[in-house]
Amino acid sequence: MIYDVVVVGSGFSAIAVACNLVRKLPPTASIAVIGDDPGFGRGTAYRTEMHLHRLNVPAARMSLFTDKPADFVEWLDRKDRPSRDADFASRSDYGLYVRDTLADLLRNRAGRCRVDFIKSKATGCVERYPGALGFLLEHGGEIAGRQVVLCLGLGNAKLPVDIGGLGAGARSHVIDNPWRLSWLTRVGPEDRVCILGSGLTMIDQVLGLRSHGHRGHIDVLSRRGLAPHGHTRDPKPPASVDIDPQAATLSQILRNIRRQVRSGTAWRSVMDGLRTRTQEIWQGLAPAERSRFLRHALPWWNIHRHRVAPDIYDQFQHLRERGVIEFHAGYLQTLTDTGDGIDIEYRKRGSQKIRALSVDWIVNCTGMERAGLAHSPLLQEMRRQGFVVADTLGLGIAVDPNSRALNRQGVVQSNLYAVGALTAGQFWEITAVPDIRTQAEQVAVEIVMSREARPQSA
Ligand SMILES: Cc1cc2nc3c(=O)[nH]c(=O)nc-3n(C[C@H](O)[C@H](O)[C@H](O)COP(=O)(O)OP(=O)(O)OC[C@H]3O[C@@H](n4cnc5c(N)ncnc54)[C@H](O)[C@@H]3O)c2cc1C
Image 1 (cartoon, protein in one colour):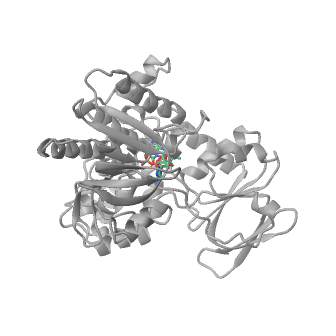
Image 2 (image 1 turned 60 degrees about the horizontal axis):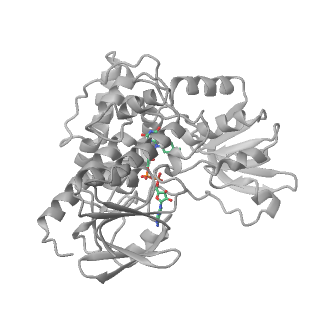
Image 3 (image 1 turned 135 degrees about the vertical axis):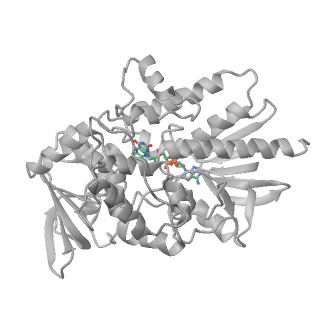
């Protein structure tokens, strides 16, 4: 069957696109959502069952829909989880909210379009249908869509070193994908754990370990040894930032931010003020300036911009102050199997000195910030066929300002969109719900308009 729209992916982005399409398309239209996620809508972020894994964006900004900003807060109230707008709800609740919202939309059969959920992975792309793009499915069969939206997320980062030399026992103590939380049940209370990477995922894993009874030492190794800041309990309104996106360089932007903070505006307000303008500023930066940002400013951007809930931050700081968590800034060199653990060698940042750690577990929490193409066999196949190309910074695929993919010749394809982290080259700030929901809505509007403009034959 040829669908009007095929959405590939089953995380938040896919469901946000599907919900917007269901609200906007006429009953004669058809949508297929292809995904391998056990809970459609949860993806990596909202699949967790642990209540202590919390949102890092206040509830008031987490509605699925831009035109119903209170939707998530109202859902929390209906579910007897009364919350204030500024509260940071649990991510498992957010996953339930996304599921419920979709289910409510689908329950109303009268007047809504057809929606089919295909539980599979798309493995390749074929162009044998007139005016439609086909996708090969992992377990056989194929599906085609006149319009296609790729919502493939970030994938998992690869470990920064080869673990081929470790024995099977040691290898089973190297956790490549910490989001399969079952690893936490295998850790002994006094085991020594090294977490690679020091971002939000690291904090989630530390709290997960503690809640599973782990009381041992935790080493955190990252290139700069920087940890995310926390939100405040009493947030100030976002400040208006004085940046001309058409004329700005990275140095000017930094100077303006520093000047504003020095003159007394709280840095969190400045960051929050930047938030709504980030896409515009990014799009105004020359390619060389964007590269400079990624090379030099990214770690600082991440820790100031992606902050954790205040009480989570306090718990984490308390463990750090007690010495339970120890930070190391440096570059991982080697892992050696000692028979009863793993020895880590890293080069200390800013020196040639090699330092060593002996641990029982290594947990990979690196690189959740770039999609790239390497994590996805489907994208690699689509690139080989010329349907997509990597953006110049290697953040994802090249898209135009309307989220339409560019093909190998650099031509915009009016029937192939991408939503979410894959489009970071064009938008940069496109990994969190407030940005993705706007993009999902815009893509849905474009799809509806182009369907209306097309002669309706089949
Ligand atoms: C741990 C974590 C916590 C976060 N917390 C917050 C938060 O508090 N607030 C916030 O706003 N944002 C948060 N984020 C950002 C988050 O990335 C977005 O909110 C959103 O979940 C991204 O959804 P996505 O659908 O784009 O990607 P993903 O959730 O990664 O989903 C992609 C989906 O596509 C599927 N897929 C991939 N390839 C194929 C294929 N070939 N065929 C079929 N299906 C495929 C995958 O299986 C997956 O289900 C968090 C992210 C993480 C990782």
